[in-house]
Length: 120
Image (cartoon, rainbow, N blue to C red; front, top):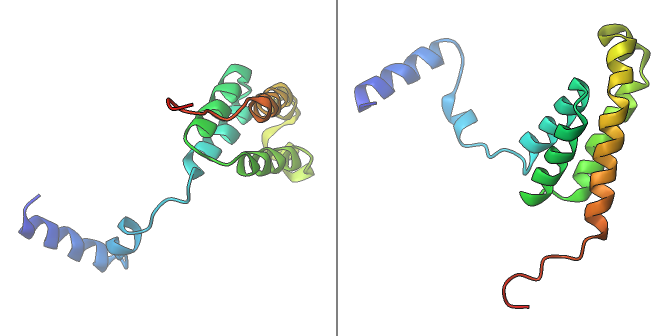
């Protein structure tokens, strides 16, 4: 995109009240995408995916406490009447096993010794 196209794009966005700099300069909170992925695969009912997403998040450096918090939020939502009414009892029930699997994967990672790297 050349300078004229960039300026034109910026003017169009500003005409709609959007300041592009506000979004492009903000870093994503560390691991937010991974935490959202964990919640989504649990909601989808995929045990294998839940385990992989927890492992992936940990591999990307997301702290275990953030994953625990995310799992706690998902668990709390499952118990809310409004959530059950919105998604249905079948979906809520389907979330139970992936949630257990995600917690198990997190506990397993807590027991693993930290990676000493190549110089140990």
